[in-house]
Length: 235
Image (cartoon, rainbow, N blue to C red; front, side):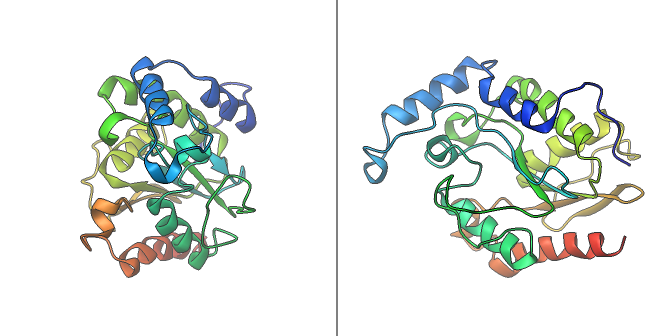
C-alpha cells in the first residue's frame, strides 16, 4: 500500500519545486539551446524553456512515468506530452480508457483534464538525444519518491519505455512499496504485482521511433490502459 509522505509538502508545492529545479546544468543548457534554435515549424513561438512539472489528478490511482520532456514538445508548451507526436498517442489512448477528457493536447490551456491519472517522468528537463545521464536520473528521483508518497490511492504505475519502467520500479522499491527484491524485466505489456493492490505495467514508449516502425501499434497501446482499468475495476 502507498506509504505516508515523509514531509509536509503538498503536490502543488512539489510541482513548484520541480519547476524551480536547477540541479542538472547540462539539461538546463540543453533546454535553452532548444528554445533558442527551434525547428522552422516552431520558429517565433515562445518556449517554456526549463523543467516541466508532473500534472493530473492529485487523487489518482494511475501514475504514468515517462522518460523526459521533449525538447520541442513539453519544453516548448510547458506540459508533459503536450504538443508532440508522443502526446497524440498517449492522450488518444487515455481518452479511450476514460482517463482523459479529450483525445488530443496541443497547448497548456486547451482544456484537457486527466481523471484518476497523474503523468510524471524520470527526468523533468529535456535531455540531449533523449538520453539522460545516470547522475541526472538520480538527481530527479526524489521528485518521483515524493509523488509516490503523496498518491495515497495509487494502484497502478505504467512505465513508458525501459527507462520509465526501471525508474518507476526503483523508486517504488526505495519507497518501500514493492515486495519484489529484484527489478522485473521490461517488456511491452509486462504486468507485475509489487504488493497487494499495487501493480507495475510496462509499455513501449509512444515515440515516433516506435510508432513509425509499428513496433508499437494503437491496439497494443490501448491494451496497456485496458489492463490498468481491469486492475482498478477489480478493487
